[in-house]
Image (cartoon, rainbow, N blue to C red; front, side):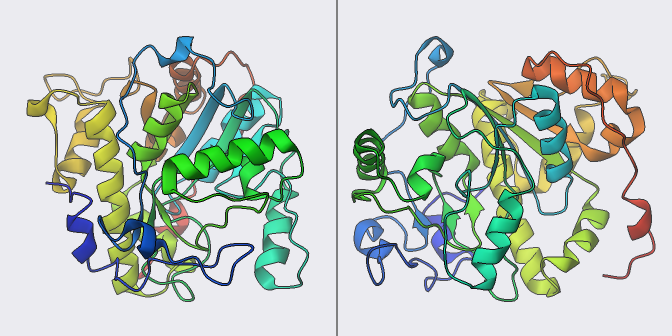
Length: 345
């Protein structure tokens, strides 16, 4: 069984020391003071969420929210940036967002983090107020395990306007309302600052956006276990920490698939069954390869990196069909797995 929120308190990769971080405008914001009734490390959405299947007919409850978000997520080095770029290029509107970063980074210090965030933000043309946005996450997102081991779980990433300074009265009011609704504090014009490295709870994040009238898609990218683990060496050269991060990330992916794609109790799977479940989605009842559709439901779709490389244009068109995207923009696809086949990491 995937761990419950309470179970995660004792998860080996989520120590109790990782439940607070710096908050703009104050010395330190101790999240534990707000959340100690639940769990110390998990930035939790405090209210009960009801998933509305007809949510797509509802306008966003806050004017600064986009109408539609395509969020791409998966374990680090599973092909999430590549898939994000495919969708971004297909939409041709430049509505790209990197994790919890604002559209255009506004930090002014000369730190490595600030310089790197500005470098990332310059790679993509971003329209902050676009009705349709593409967002890239990884599990975990940001930094490296060397400097930020045992990343905490974050339940909701606020819209871009709330992660930069806000001068507009409407933005201040709406960002205050969202932060109060979710965590019980106000930003008062200051940017919401997330941990440098964190794991995103896909389920609670999607439910919050669905509940507030946003058509929130999640594209979950999976890659060969051995190759994916080797590829993450650049993000985390500690085998032990890398495995711990993978275990938490996989649990979060399984939680999301169970919540949105496997609504019947008898269908739900465990993290140990995940790899087998993914493989089974591409086979018929006789074990033969099946290419009619990608596994998807309730705007959550699972994408196989290896199938994307193998099928190329056909697979990209299948993805566009599931996401409701009309585009003939097909990227060049190269197999990045080859360089890891003889890896010893």
